[in-house]
Length: 86
Image 1 (cartoon, rainbow, N blue to C red):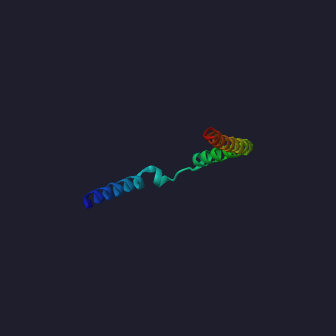
Image 2: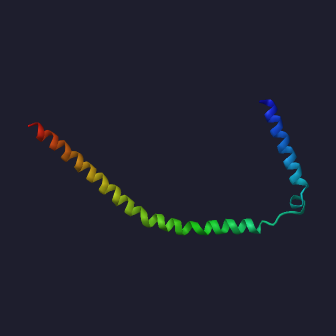
Image 3: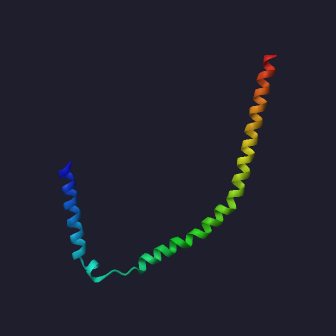
């Protein structure tokens, strides 16, 4: 088990060393592409929020109707069972 950990540690150290020696790490990296991706992702959230706000009342109404139908079905099923026993 300790041999695996030491191998993983060696691989991690070698990878970090290779990254630090590469031209990307030494020359710096332009984060403009990263900020563009983050901005595009954030721009998606308002329409998704509007969709959720528009659908939520419909889901609540469907849930209430489903509960009431199930409740009345249970009541009628119980009454049928009692009436059959008479």
